[in-house]
Image (cartoon, rainbow over all chains, first blue to last red; front, side):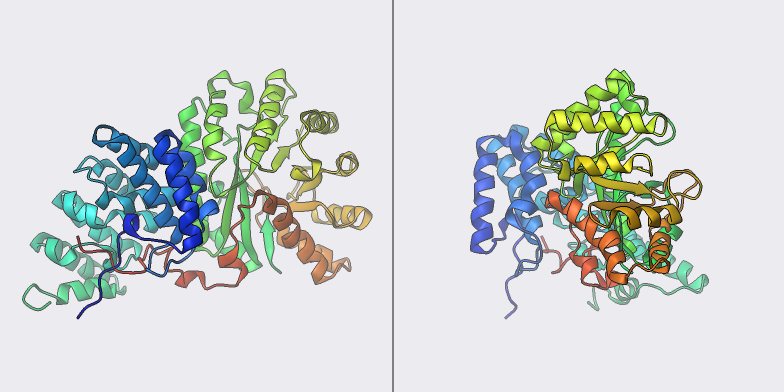
Length: 205
Length: 289
């Protein structure tokens, strides 16, 4: 029997003291979603930072849950504007948390511009967070393939890419093979993740 | 020698500089928001600059094993341009960010009324956001500018130990010491201070409440001037402990007043190349949705 997968950032729970501090911030944001930007900026200082036992980071969980609370309190009509504002006014850590929250926010494809913005950066933390389940569900094929390739380029392990085996297609395989050939021609190392992807086929997972 | 450069404009420097700094022992920096050489014409230009200081530059520094923090403010030069005044309305948002450890650089350039208004407002913002302040002193008419700076700090009522008055020299250090503020010195190749003069000031006034920086930027400057000053201190008979006091513990004490210094990764001598977070690696595989 395989263990349950780790919860997404918005469903993760923290140790009791941190959880209580986060609940206080969440209450504040539910009452007035306009306070989200300030709450997200302060979240790590108020709630805590560092690894959480479930594999997330405490500050990511705190910020993702604040974003989710504000989106819920605002209602479907305004949620995507709230999420976009949290991303646009956030620093890199805050933007990362917004990206981690996206799969649970019921925004359909409305937040895709944020994912595309993150994929234009060279910040590995943002690129990795952008290639999660939300991108797997909504990002169009061309952009998604370039996202996978970018992970290989900037050294992000492909475990960061959600649904890789399900979404990979012949065009992605061609692009990765071309990348590997270019590296080989230059006498450079081919990232093991690129090799592993090419060695794995749907019939030989 | 472990070094904390409390004032350096890394956006103007190359990755070669980051490598040389790390080799010399630099493990932490503070990058104050300042002028870019080319005057800015809109508030949006500052948004991208501030975002860069808190985003890309932090990431870039971390890749070289250096903890990067910033100070955020509307600088004295551009305080005079009405097109940039709207930056004051942006500051409350930025002054809440994790990587922001002070309000700065604020102060005087040409000692205008506009500069003074913006300076006073930003000292008030420092109080509202519980942050220390980095004050730039003017290159022209420095002594008068430093005296006026100290009068304004006293009028606004901010605690002097939460203020560093920067770019000091032999002529301006005593009034700053008398006021109880921190004394900042920028060591440059051929302007501001040099290593030998810096050592003489330390011999005269002692090692408390003093920070030494390279203030390296896009002008003729040297990001290793902190290290060179440390070498000059040793050659003059100061101990390793004295050098650590000035080049590490003093900036940690000053900016630590913000409660926002994050030095765990570099302080413990962690292997930054093995830092999985910096590589964007999830601690668990992404949930398969």
